[in-house]
Amino acid sequence: MAYQTPLTIESVVKNIDSKKYLLPSIQREFVWSPKQIEKLFDSLMMGYPINTFLFWEVPKEKAKEFSFYEFLRNYHQRTGKHNPKANISGSDDIIAILDGQQRMTSLYIGLKGSYAYKTPHKKWNDPLAYPPRKLYLNLLGESEDTELSYDFRFLTDSEVESMNSQLDPSGNPVYFWYQVGNILDVKEEFEINDILFDNHLNVLPQAKFANKALFKLFAVIRRNQSISYYLEESTELDKVLNIFIRVNSGGTTLSYSDLLLSFATAQWKEKDAREELTNFMDEVNMVGRGFNVGKDILLKSCLVLSGFSDISFKVDNFNRSNMLVIEKNWEDLTRAFRTAVELVASYGYNRENITSNNLFIPIAYYIKSIGMPSNFVASGAYAEDRRLIKKWFVASMLNRVFSFMPDGILKPVRAIIDKNPGSFPYAQIADYFKGTNRDITFTDDSIGNLLWAKYGTGDLLVILSVLYPWADLKNNFHVDHIYPKSKFTQKKLAKRGIPEESIRFYLKNVNYLGNLQLLEATPNEEKKDKDFDEWLGQAFSGPEQLKAYKEKHFIPDVDLGFGNFEEFLGAREELITKALKKELM
Image (tube, rainbow, N blue to C red; front, side, top):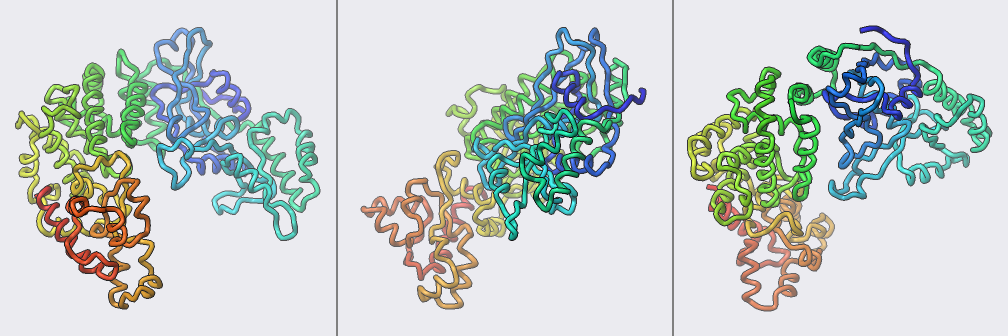
């Protein structure tokens, strides 16, 4: 392994463009955040070293023996996180990046690509929640971020336009956002003056800073040899894999599952492990309203469903013989896991309200143990199985049984399923863990604690799924405040004549389970912030309709006026408690 003449960033970007630089399949995917990329460019501007890279030279006659991927060019948090597979037929020698992929991808995205991440408060499955953002440098001032000297930011076109129009008290612009990648179009250094003059930056008080920033950016990207690297020429994959693990295992962005996936990638014979895993991960995460299953859960599932005695996450369990077993059974393993995800989605759960992705694994194992019937999610023949699985699923979430050391439950549950064929062994699982910190049984006290489930929390939707088994949560249901939350302010309550000591009770309890119901979208829109008794009178014309609504939503036979909230809440909590005990105990 020899140290080579350093390269400019511009030359590295050109080699990525021409696909001379590729990524070996053992490499993990891109995981850096926009902030990390901004700090990388700031470090370059400050003249800080960005560490040495490690390249792997693969002769064209040997390249076909390995799998390679292109660099990610336009990152999209939801739909564009995976590197496309490279076509290397007829190519010259390949340079694969063993160490430095995150930095090199960041340089490319900052200069020629884009970064689309979810806008806060937008829904995960909303395509408009991920506007593409380019990297910009503010030429009119230093960063307000104490961790940065230069003001680099990923911005949308509209953000640039809006911020560039802001003026300080003297009437001077506060920002001039220069798209960092445009520096690649500046052929000669003197052309920087044209940029300053054409945009009238030379007459501003910040002209000196703008001049310094642009000239430095040109030097950093076009002139300085910032990319120092070693070159490895061995074509022995085992040696290359060991080098990769040695140089990467100390990094903060390389998870243990990434390392284990590297082992799998190196040892599968017929399939491309990385491509199979990432494609399947994307597939199951699009089921229903979407999930967030990662590589670690899928790899753990492979160990459990393959029947290996040791299912712990360690390198020894990802040996060649185990990997070949997983490769051979890949279709069955993924089919069982996919069915488990589809089943959970049919219950109405998604990435927003499932507390642990480990919950899928015992369900997948059970489905595999009964031969993976194609109609498991819908057939009446499996209705009892689905009921018992949901009961276990709900109890496991509410009792946080997967909140620590998942192997401590995965192995025993697998053994219980093996010993109790015929139906999903809910009772046997409950008996096995009773009295332990994995106990899924409920007591009067634990049922009482469920009443403290609060609006906006994941537990609330789990509990509502128990109370409303008829409601398809994956469709258009809203969590509604029975007594409108908008009317629960100190001022409004006092104006309505609620006594001071009762106001505290109203404010404390408005967001808890006793005042919440599942309501279809249309009735909820009609209800809005009307008083509950007023809305009931308008919504239900006949006594039979009203009676059916009250039974379905656990509405007690008490005065439903706004001033009787305390009695209503106590009476409704009694009805809810009775229903929860019937379902969970």
